[in-house]
Image: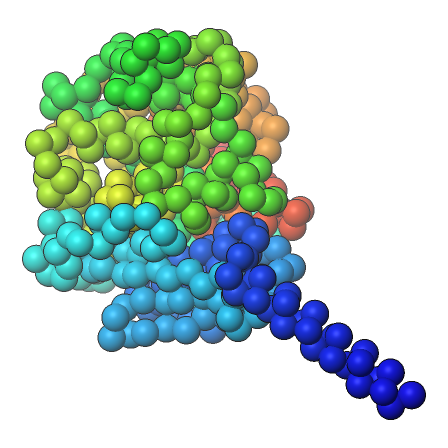
Length: 455
């Protein structure tokens, strides 16, 4: 019996060693995606938002994520400003590195062009400047002009929803209500996820205003020359109707998760996709498409330094969005689809900019009518999506139904990020949180209540 037990124990040890070796040297892509996700989220929240890394791992990564994420651990190197994630304590390590002014970049494989750029106060993008003065009313400062009726709504936990991080209500150019979740305040930069897509559309609009881009331009990518993808126009990309194949499912290793957490050149990955429909004929919501837009507007500059400086110089700076940071991939291209951090008040400044049709303090930054173009419905989406990276429906409710005016549109992001914008009411509602889709929360109840309170 002892001999049998010894042999069984030796066999078990050999199996464990073999599995450990396999995980160490040939980890499945799902594990690498998980570690990339953990490293990226923890890095950004530690070095941009000043949060505790273990709290971020537990609350932001593990609690709402895939069950395997429970086995991921992270180590933080504050001298190198980096975070490394390893599942089971050793497997599939992925490192994310922070650079002031550019946020965090996942370094899983490939060239590290983005990390070779200068860092710190002299970085081409510039480090984020000090928060706005609490003694001056928003948007010039950070002081709210509280309206009790609206403040009561945002303080209602049922309306604000589970996992709330921040909510702000803007009416007639004033911040009239705001509320924050545990551990979050008005100076905490928060991830907008796909709300960044609308910011990328605005950056494209700025380059159109500069005479450097054209909505009708085709032949956009050199590798597309000679095939049907050359017919794709800039307007097709903006309206998510390029016809390019892209799997947007976040539940496994798919195009979107592979791109965001494994690929060093995200736009190149998206550009490599085949055409599955004629350009302009079908709607396919694609995070890869927006990263292509980032590369395209960045390529309108003579060099990477000018392109990397552009968001802060041309958009964030003029709007006073002092906290805003758009992060790059390892090739040096902004991840304009997903990776932008800003305080709730700075997200609200961007919303006000759109409410004013791309004008700020009387100065036109976007071409006249560009925001109307952004929210004009695309035929390919059946009217659900706008022509410029915004939504015209939210949770099944379409603009022009219920108490939502016909010019209502939404910026929406993963895990409960949303901004409702109603130009005719001069109203915007910013809601940021950690609220997965399966929570049962419906942000439209908050939006409906805010609009009703205007009467």
